[in-house]
Image 1: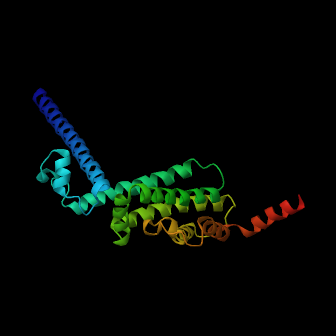
Image 2: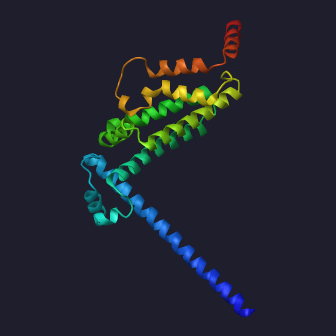
Image 3: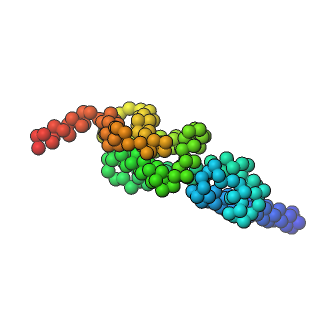
Length: 229
């Protein structure tokens, strides 16, 4: 009986050590992967993604190119990882806009599109070479771009649904409305169109979208109250 108990304890102890080793290995792998992505981003900012090679990244990290390939199968995979960081920044910013906006849904929607446009414009002006990689992801419709657009649609849908529930927007299909809203505001979200200054303006486009979403009866009631006041 004691032998059985001892064997079971030994097996459990061994399993725990294996689990601990795997955890440490996973952490080390994640840290190394992150280091490679950060180094690649620094080099892309300096020389552009087309001129940044795996050998350059390896040299930056003082390791061999073969070691880079332990974590990424190709330079293209590294480019995708760098671009994923840009998408993450945009999504996090949008989430913060929603969390920090106590006002009406229309204000939140306006702030969301403005925040995306602000990030893209800033990158276009200050990080043109990194922006070129971001444009490539849009031009070639990378899978991570489609994931990013779905995530933005979810966040916009959440805001529109809250507006519908509050009676600010007319009841309807919040998911479809979110897709239409982002599609109409595409020029202010798409990095290829960031530098364009043609009409209509940001305010005109967003005002048009919000007018389409608004509960017309509620809006008319508010207008009448203003007139009588």
